[in-house]
Length: 396
Image 1 (tube, rainbow, N blue to C red):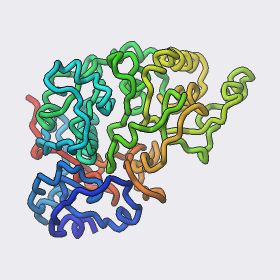
Image 2: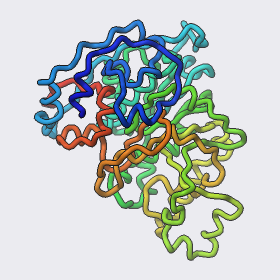
Image 3: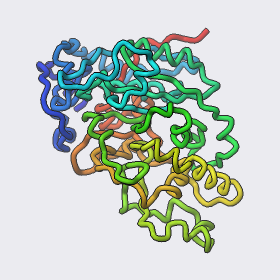
Image 4: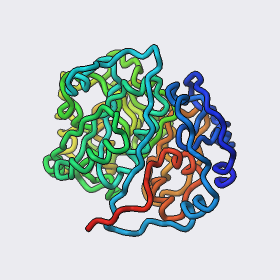
C-alpha cells in the first residue's frame, strides 16, 4: 500500500482554499503525491504553486529507505536538506520590512510559534516546521521561537535551522534546565522527565514581552492546515486554548493520595475539569504574566516532590492550574495518540473527523519506527515532511 502510494505519478499542484482534511482522504490515502511540496492538495500554500515538485522517487530508493537502511551509528549527526521557500499570498499583511530582527520578532501581524529544540527530536522539529510553512497562507509572517537547553550547542542548532530554512524568522532562547530539574519528579516514562519538556511552562519568561500570543507545538506533529486558523482561536477571558477531552478519565491523572486529601480534592471545586493536551496550545502570554502562572505551576511541582500526587510528567501541573478554565480547541487540531501509549508505542488508527494536525503523541515516533524498519501505516503521512539528508555525517 505504501509503495503504491509513493509510486503514483506526480500531479500538477494547484492552490485552493485552506480547509480541514476529510477523514476519507487520509484513510484511503487519496493524496496527490507531490511528495515534498504537499501531501494534502487542498491545503497547499498559494506560494507553492510557483515551485515544481521533485521527480518521482524510485522503487529502489523506497525499498532501501523503508526496509534496508536503519540508522545505527550512535555517534551520527543528522544532516538535513534545504526546504523550498514559501511566499505570502498577495493579501497577507506585511510583518515588518527593513528593520532589526528584534522588531520583526515582535510583530503583531506575525503568527508566533514556540517549540523546543534538541538533538533528540530535531528530525521531528524540522518536519513540523516544514509542515507549518507549507500549509500557511502567509508563511513569511510565521515567526518561530525555539527553546533549547542552556547546555546545548546553540550554534549547531542555529546552523541546522538556517541551512534548511535560510529565509526563516526565528530566535533560539536558552533554557536553564538545571533550575527546573530540582522540581521534576520521576514519571511513568523517562522521556517525560526531560527538563526541556517543562519549558512550555516558562514561555512567558523566555520570550520577549512584546510577544503577547503564541502557539505552542510539540516536535512530534505535522500540520496540514493553515496555522493562522489555530492562532486566531478566540481566547475570551482565558489564558490558553487547547484540545480538550472530557470523555477521558480525569481522575486517573492524579493519585489516590491526591483525591483522598480533603484540601487537595477541592482543587477543582466550581470547575468542570477535563483532560487537555499540552502539545498543542494557544497561549495569551500577557495574561499568563499578569497571573504569574509559572509560579502556580511550580508550586504544584514542589508539592509533588513532598507527596506524590500525579504520575505523568509536565501535564498534571498544567491541569491542576488550568483544567476547567481553558477554551477548547476543535479536535481536528490534534489527531493525537499516533505514537501509541506511553509503554509500547503500538500503531493506532485516526480518530473519526476532519484533520488539521497529526500528532504522534505517545512512545512511538515516526522517524524512530522508520529507522527501525517497523513503520506504522500512518507514519507514511509524516514521511513527505522528513528533511533528513542521507547519509549521516559521523562525528569525529
